[in-house]
Image 1: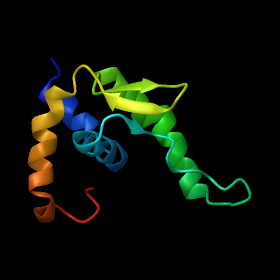
Image 2: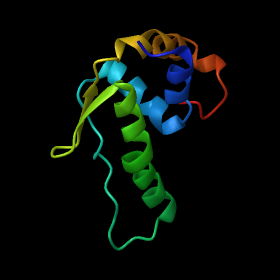
Image 3: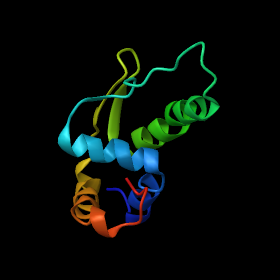
Image 4: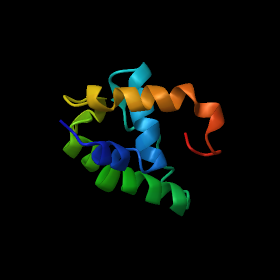
Length: 103
């Protein structure tokens, strides 16, 4: 069982919150839905995608909140997803009361 602090840590970054919230509605979720233009120079987008692959997905996977298939880039609810579900539902229910950019 995950601790409350671990659940808050998982929700501590907007990219992780968006991914987990998406899994409330849809399962599995493809983490490769956004593509980078190889001729473009959008450094911020590149950094975001690198962060997702090397920081956020491994953290959520480590907590057991997601399961990731690296061959197909499919993301689905992990064995511990139910442990964070109530927090996600509560935050989603009060989304309009939260600061801009939360989700």
